[in-house]
Amino acid sequence: MPASAPRPIPALGEIDTWVFDLDNTLYPAACNLFQQVDVRIGAFVAKTLGVQADQARVVQKDYLKRYGTTLRGLMVEHKLDPKDYLDFVHDIDVTCVPANPLLDDAIQRLPGRKLVFTNGTVAHAQRVMDRLGVTRHFEAVFDIHAADYVPKPEPVVYDQLLRQYAIQPRRAVLFEDMTRNLKPAHDLGMTTVWVRVDSPWAQPGDDRSHIHHEIDDLAEWLVAYNNAHGKPDPARD
Image 1 (cartoon, helix red, strand yellow):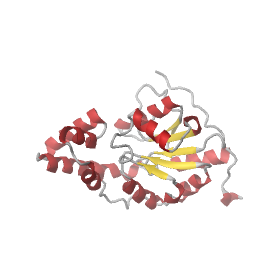
Image 2 (tube, rainbow, N blue to C red; image 1 turned 180 degrees about the vertical axis):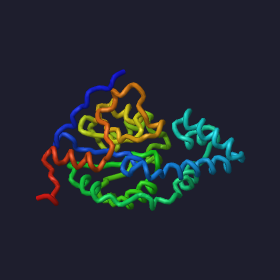
Image 3 (cartoon, one colour; image 1 turned 30 degrees about the horizontal axis):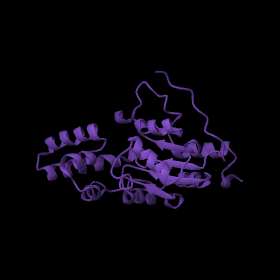
């Protein structure tokens, strides 16, 4: 199916909720934090199931494919308590995430509420946002605990997010690096923005109809949006 024409982002005053994925969206994919997480997931699976690393890798990816996350698979198949898993896999070095003053300023200038919507945890999100220097802008982080361990892109999680924060979908935007996670938001009426990454698992395939905008740099795009909609950079005044 050919790509649909970009849908204009509504003018300021029409959008009142800005929802951001965390990993590879708020910070550059080049930081490659997930590589650290991926290694620790494999180590956790190997230890928990008492298998060798190569077998753990097979289980890890099988659960990811069938259940959306390895965690969900472990919970369903092995009645795993998720807390130990989440603490372990997010115990990573985030010092590679650079401060981003441009992003900090751009998010500050956006009107309305800002939320993080992640399959990770609040603790992980706060560590990353602290590194970026943007924590103060966000009303809340809707994480995997809040979602009762049901991951994106399960539609029920999006419904829960909208209810919990009284979000009107047609007045909201979702930014994501994984295109499949944009589909439920599109179906609900949200504006969707794909922050492009090179990883094969993030690609949209032939159908881009659920993606309204494709961008390469979140901060630069937000600056351009603010400037186009009457929120010029105060540093230029």
